[in-house]
Length: 265
Image 1 (spheres, one colour):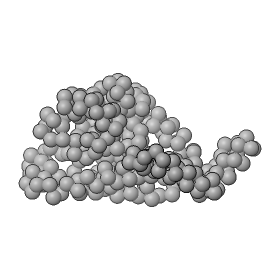
Image 2 (spheres, rainbow, N blue to C red):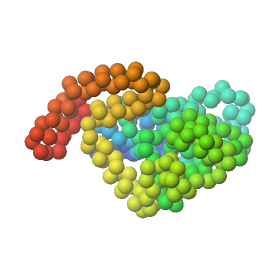
Image 3 (tube, rainbow, N blue to C red):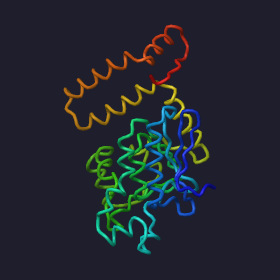
Image 4 (spheres, rainbow, N blue to C red):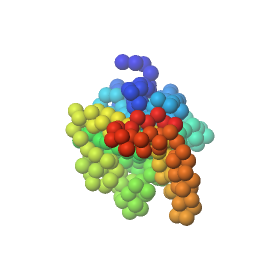
């Protein structure tokens, strides 16, 4: 097993980014945050990468901040306890990068997902979950808050009342519950998770990369725009896309009754 806390691997046009501290259920450390942030930025800038899959090695997706480090006064949580909030922006940089990415990101939730790990999963565009995995929103039980995106994502994904229920009760969420709430797109057996994720990722990667990226940008802008302004933005994007080689390829492929071969230009 690699000693790197984050492993990035390109398979075709799909880039797998794996948290790699399985002995600690992929608990977050400063080194992991640095490598994860770099891996996400590299994936977003890489022309060969069309879809990103974020997952964890071993039995867990991510168990949150490393509490053993915190108890010893070390790591991220330890520094926060000792020195206040001056490191807060550094701690959040991965989730901010994730939210800014134009490449679609799928969370493959293979096991326990808590704290910072839950916020990471919520920041992905789609979530596929193993049936035995569990989401652990126990922030209030630890005397803290969802510090890296949860307070922003949960009301938007679930509505105010459900977000309050999940955050304030702090009870574990099974895969079936997560699916019923709309927190995840699909639940599959653990031995089928990788195949399902790869199938989704390859099907997305086969579509026009420019259109996928622009769709994601417009979704993001639409959260803060009025309808009329957003419609104008959409029209300008559509004009640009119809000038692309990918659009011409789509039209030709349709006329010739063959699958399109998109190049992303």
